[in-house]
Length: 447
Ligand code: SAJ
Image (tube, rainbow, N blue to C red):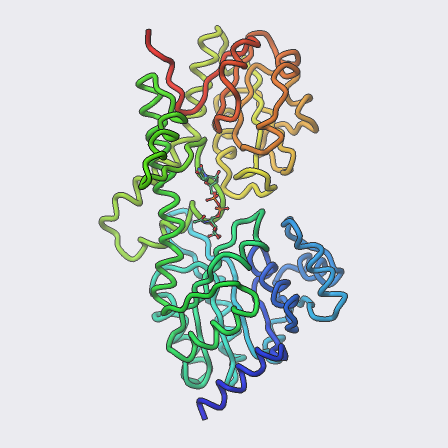
């Protein structure tokens, strides 16, 4: 019996007759739905937001991700992709993929309420032979302690025998999601051997490399990746603070250290943003109140950086005889990282709020992102710099890397200051043009 259900599912995957329902159709769910549709499956993207459903069914992308609009349009036109507000779509599904959000509360504890709600709907819709995939990032053991028992008790069926259940974490970075979905090796961790095998077969239709493991290992590996990156960036940020004290340049220090074949230090900056690195380390350690100091400290260091930018600015303005309260500050970049329009958890939020609280006039400008976090919005780079006392580079967008310093100098107030949070400006060139330049991790040489 078991073998024949599995064989039937495998054959539906091979001939693309499998109907997939994706629950949660945003930054991760939509690229997933569109790519599976593009490989030939009939996919329904379900979401609670009417604007998402309306956009997809009109062949548009509600998420600003390169290439996604075209992919959605093409597959909606071809009749392979549609969207719906109704959870009951799952009654027609052969496979259900859950990619709802798993944010953290203010106290840094995981908020699994969206996942719980999704599981309730799925549990009531499970039929024999269904494949259930969880792609939402979750704390270790969520599959064994929450997902499996919940689905088994709601359905009265047994995982890995009557239906198949696997954890398949996403590894896609916004801005390059479609390419990374296909090219980054995909971890597939089943709740048992049948689940791993069948889930891997499904993902092999889209992903170039699939690595089979178990559900718990996949959960921890996903969190380990983002935590490693957060800890590494925290080390780079701490090095930056050390270099500022000692008159060294962190950029050169890291360049030299990274010539060692076993060293790979990341890049310091004005803070770590985005929805993943700011949350996943807390998911990894949330089961234990005590210990894990390295991970907690890394989070603290990265969260300290926006405040450090505010302090650097006050010091630099003081050197030119200006106070923050009588200055106009231009924050360049409100997106959390380069060349995307995504403001989630961006370091610029804390920086702008900090300046506003201290009484400065703050303007914000971002070529990709409309968010201003309460600062005055400028329609162009030029407008944002006109008469300004200080520019702060928070995001390393290509346009800001190539900023025309000569033009900026002519537009800005007397004795203009640059606070370079991403080290994209040449300090020598800036000072030659008459700027007061301070860069993150650039100590002033002692003579
Ligand atoms: N950042 C630095 N220095 C660096 C690298 C990044 O300050 O050397 C900052 C960025 O500016 C940004 C933040 O860190 O504010 C996060 O950026 P990120 O490049 O780490 O990318 P995310 O958050 O967009 O995506 C990460 C990715 N994880 C890893 O690279 C290990 C992506 O592959 C995951 O799919 C994604 O998290 C996720 O959804 O979990």
